[in-house]
Length: 496
Ligand SMILES: Cc1ncc(C[n+]2csc(CCOP(=O)(O)OP(=O)(O)O)c2C)c(N)n1
Ligand SMILES: [Mg+2]
Image (cartoon, rainbow, N blue to C red; front, side):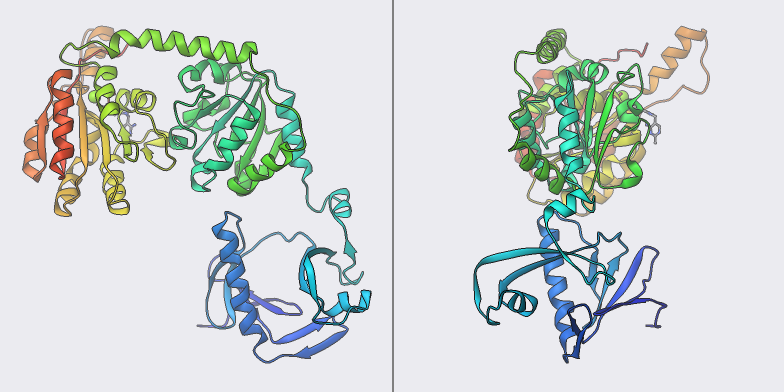
């Protein structure tokens, strides 16, 4: 390896330019210093041990969801790290009396302490790294629990608070912390498509079935690893209240204030920060009260929306409507199934009707609704989770974007279940053109015969012509333990 540019040399380490922008190579020296460089020496092999100890600690922190600068150990003395902004504090944990502690208190070196002692030092060579307390740290603004308190103050001041739970909570593994937070504060929540399962869809505080009302009327929105992108209507009116105040938790600083101004920003790992919020809540009596008009309004809208779809849920006519067909899929999908959705109505209605109770069990076209992701997701999910049922619901148009990958699924004998909701949607634009303009252009499209297509690749196939047949087809698909495709003809309701 060619030696890279030396960026900085400190008392114990040398930093070199890393292989990519934003990275550094950290070299551990054998030099030992104490009392701010007044005592110096060399301990052979110290750097090698420090490199290992540092790696061990950083990996442990990573395991519990605390992000660190560590990327990987490169060799005996070097590790690859990310560039970070350094808070000028040194945290010392003492288990045995040594060094300055022995000197300050006259306790012999090597004395075991009755319990661990945590000390903080302000890192400043000119001042000789003075010891400081948490009071100094917060008063001087070196590290800020104020943001946590500020976030809770804003939430507490809300009349109609709403948590938007996003994918960030899934990737940081924050489901336990988020659940504790929602249940402790009693604020309603809506999850983004990729945030499904962090909180169970059928949780009593879910405002998912009254999403439009919840988004448009909330006066404080807490973005928990969720972003105000296309899926969230960019946080703009009329979908959002024009005076909405935003608390934003995100790991990426550049996301703060995207599309709508952020009042309180909490930048960092989701799991760690929600845990901090939960700890801070222990010192507060506040709970968002039960019986507010906000809770009542959401409950009312949820009930009204449910009443509106009930007739479709119980309509056994063939061809099925989306709700009735999805009801069968929902009844059949086991709890640990990974569900993939793509299409327009298939995906949108599927988001409301196919529930998730586990995080990281839903794959969805996401931020931009991009079709063509379905088969890739199906194959990836089956490869990563061979022990879980993989169920995809795909529109007839959507499956056309990447359906050829059925060959891959068969070649690797992946026992995936693909349900194609065929409303002959290709005709939709044709119908719209005819209705609006009295003529058509470029929209005389046809679908393939999906059963023949599936058969050609070696899928087990079935066409379920109505609700009566779908339940059975789905049961047979599970029993078969091989790649299965079920085509479900869906009644065509032309777009407006
Ligand atoms: C790559 C890509 N091209 C085009 C679109 C535009 N688009 C959105 S929905 C849709 C068709 C959806 O039809 P289908 O998959 O049959 O779902 P349905 O609503 O009929 O259930 C298309 C083409 C898109 N989202 N992504
Ligand atoms: Mg369709």
